[in-house]
Image 1: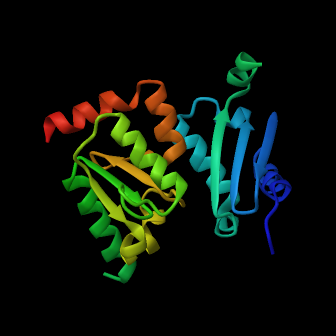
Image 2 (image 1 turned 30 degrees about the vertical axis):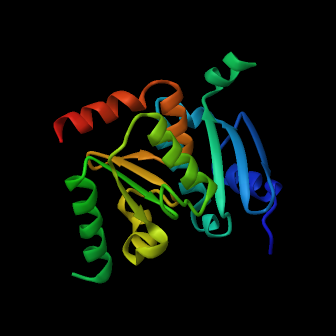
Image 3 (image 1 turned 30 degrees about the horizontal axis):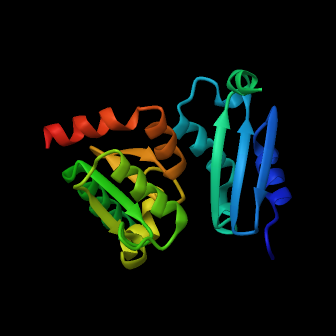
Length: 79
Length: 111
């Protein structure tokens, strides 16, 4: 079964409260912009690890995920 | 020691005995994945001309066990002085923000 960008978005939302999330992709490569309060006080590596943790075994189905992770404050800055 | 412990020990040795290690799919000259290619490009742009590149497609130890070493499930992975820096997104972001170059300079200066 092919994973859709909506699947990936839902997988993330199931484990991580997000202020904003946007996922695009072709079923093998996905690009995500993820904005979450849970990223506050964390470096980029810890933020990416948090998303991978939330995805868990589902990463096996997701070939590649490119991420931009931001706190709500960082997100507000670029709006 | 079981297979996993042996594998993690090999990875620990590799990343601590070499200042800069890139685990990637393919080689810097012939990357087999866009993200790995981008990671190698970032290192080149950051002026790194000497580093250890491990082709995970030909190395069962890292292919099967690297994800457990630093709790990071995808390739590529960059290590500087034994510490996971991140994948290609993080490498590119740190490079653009000028944060990667000082880490590299420090690592290669002490080598």
